[in-house]
Length: 220
Image 1: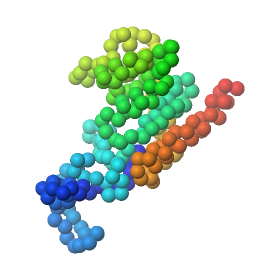
Image 2 (image 1 turned 120 degrees about the horizontal axis):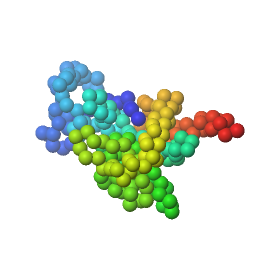
Image 3 (image 1 turned 45 degrees about the horizontal axis):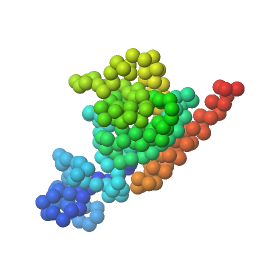
Image 4 (image 1 turned 180 degrees about the horizontal axis):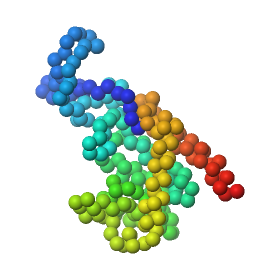
């Protein structure tokens, strides 16, 4: 959920902290539209904030990618029809994905039979896997063994259902692609987590409605 934002130093009481504006480069001119050279200065959520949406956070999706001001949208999909059964929006940080996943799966895990949860390598963390198992949810998480030990072992990967989940889970990208492009949420026009979250959830519901005619046609 990207935002068109202006990123400026935060305002604090300490004269030595760059967040109070003292770390800005010398500016020419005056008033609100003065010119300034920020080349070479570092930007982070600790030192700077958006001028129009303080709840937005800088986030980098991967190594070598540009950090952008954004929120993080999360969706839970059922595997049979590829419909979104839950959606939420959080602050953009390195733990939000796993926390949101546990929040969305918890009310659905309280049933006699264990359910499975497919997810990509970002969810391969011991704490997350253990939390799922404690909820009676089987973690069908992609293994991340790049220089580390995966929390997913042969107890899970040996079952045929694991391979099926790894294949089907990629369909969630169809939902995100539709929400970003067709529903226009790749660069939201709203500000504030509550409003952006409402728009994201509404877009997820619209995606389900757009899929229904195809599902009904296939079942006819």
